[in-house]
Image (cartoon, rainbow, N blue to C red):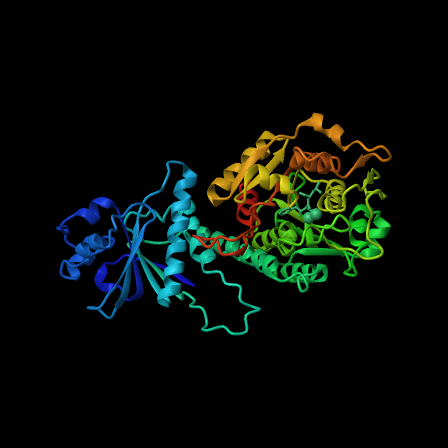
Length: 507
Ligand code: BES
Ligand code: ZN
Ligand code: ZN
């Protein structure tokens, strides 16, 4: 997609789709008296005048009043240089900064969706009512444009037609677009698309070896260091909680470590570690899940997918901090070697864990990865995991749980999330619940009680983190979606990628 700015008027527009933002007052007007001036962005009044005063009455008949987020499309017949016009209600639906960014993202999404319907490849957007010189606004707008245009049809053999790809977007009435914002939007949506692809792939193809293959591709394209620990090495390292989960499957387990080192590294350079749960399919193991909905457990590697997507973006955007990614990956299946309720294993940290529920496997594979990240030494460690159904019960399908003891880290993540439009809600790490993890036989068990299940899961992870500020993001709710609105498409969301990249860039 070619992006450019053009300080020009309606006469110069050549586009399949022209987008013009409006406010109610302009729609209700009888017509526009302000003459077109070179350089002034195109308004609805200009278009009404050009089409002989027929546009405003048509909009009124269509009951379009121009409220924020509403849209109305007309076919343009008098002028072959412009094929259709999309009028879009300017302004945010609420008063917060997040609402403002979301409105830009929604506009970008509406344009992508409308271009798809109209098969428009050349799009011009009037900057009337828009402030696209503001970097965060522009990034949000471009996020919508790229993310809503996402398709996953690899496994559909009867594709009716090739999807339309927008070739160029011209911002009318802008002098120039900030390059840095364009680069950031491209990298973040590119990383998100990679995560979505991985989540959407079927679990018979997106296996642990496939995760490794994609991580290697990202590392070699982005010149990142990569180490892949296989079963034999994991045994030597004593990664027994990760290995315990892998016993029940014939797929080999792995722990992938990827490293981005900034060009100007000193002893003061901050190190941020990110850890992603990579269960490529969670059957529940012997504590097997019910059949309804089990297919959704192919998304149980969404944390790992996000981490790979983040590294892809980081490799391009080159922040000033060092970033290390840890991806433990295996299936949670059942065979004659599967872990049993009652098994006790010694984790890499040396702590023994009594496995009382084989479906609480995410925390087992994360335990060893968090131990490794802590031992490698870092300032900040953030894990992303589709960890508990309890978190979905607490916060619903659109919101992730944020667990941390560090207020500054919480605020940093929430500030980044405000710009990305992802919802996170801070959850409490209630220390008195730690005793719910006490085991009769081992140092701890892998489950607490039903109540507060997302908190006991977070407290379990905390046992394996040392000497850094740590945050746990439980993304079980928002990792995938059935929605097909704004920038979301049904399937994997790539949740966490854009927030984490923003967070890392702000360090
Ligand atoms: N992968 C699931 C959590 C999950 C649930 C993700 C719903 C996405 C949507 C996790 O491994 C799991 O099964 N957790 C159990 C833990 C319980 C056994 C303590 C759960 O939440 O029921
Ligand atoms: Zn599970
Ligand atoms: Zn799981």
